[in-house]
Length: 231
Image (cartoon, rainbow, N blue to C red):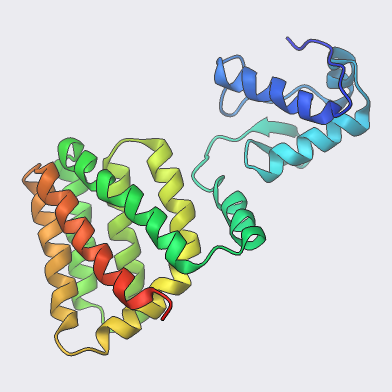
């Protein structure tokens, strides 16, 4: 199953073997990993190297430890990108403009993909979010519906990488979006502008019109960028 490794950075080679076995299907979601003792025997490395590798895999979201059961390949990867993104953000001093630029890159094309693939059930979920956004009186609740609206568009793309990436970026954006919504709504008429943008986006998705969907998403995110950018 595994093969012995020799390296000055042993734990990195151990990680590479895990990643290869996940990629080629040898290890699948939910699979239980061999015990530390078995891994030491199969890989020919120290227990310290095994523990270091497992710790790193847990940090990036590939592996989860279950008390009394052992280590398992994660079954749900939707949260696995969040911590690495937060780490990159903090270490490199990225600002909110850079995060929003990444979000625009992802979401504009995602809207087009979703328009081609969205089904009636997913449209109904978006309608529920839009109705909630319209009727909610509390700004925190409005923000919740807004985030769900965008997240459900990503899910409609049927692309798990897009869903994971947007989920991670959205987690970084939460505080900034709240700030931006506050600034946007201070300007008279912008509440209607926001609702019209969401409605136009939903209409394009319902019509399965990729060009209109990407255009509506771009206009919406451009408005957010205008109010969120550093001045």
